Amino acid sequence: MSNYNPQEALKQYQKLGIESEVSHASPHRLIQLLFEGALGRLAAAQGAMERGDIAVKGEMLGKAIGIVGGLRSSLDMDAGEISERLDQLYEYINLRLLEASAQNDIDKVVEVIQLLKTVKSGWDEIGPQAAKAP
Image 1 (cartoon, one colour):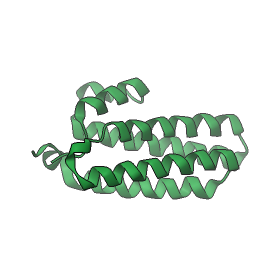
Image 2: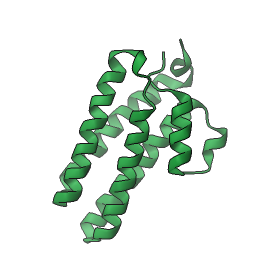
Image 3: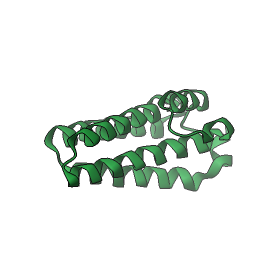
Image 4: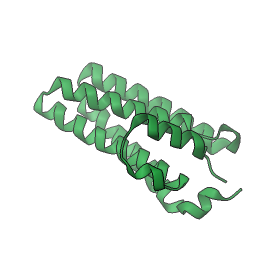
C-alpha cells in the first residue's frame, strides 16, 4: 500500500518544475525525485549560508519548503498511521526550515537534511512494486 497519491505527486512535481525526467517517471520515482530535489536545494542553501549569501539561502530554502509541501500534499491520508506520521514530520521539517531561514541557523538545515535522507532511504528500500501494492 502506497502512502502517496501518484496523481498529486505528479501535479506537485510539475508545478515545482524540478527536472524534465517527470514525464517518464513512475509514481515511485516521482517521490524519489521530490526527495532529491529537496535535498539538492537544502545542500545549496547550506552552502549559501556558509558563504553568507542571504539571497540564495532564501531562494533555496523557499524551494525546499515548496518541495516538502509537495511531498506532504501527495500523501495518501487514507493509507493509515504512516501517512499521518509523515504528515507530522513534514510539518516539523517546514517549521525547522522557516526557523533556519529566520535565524540563519545551518544546524537546522543539517537536521532537516538528515531527516529527509532517512525518509528517502526508507522510500528507496520499499521499491516501486511495494509502493504500488493495494
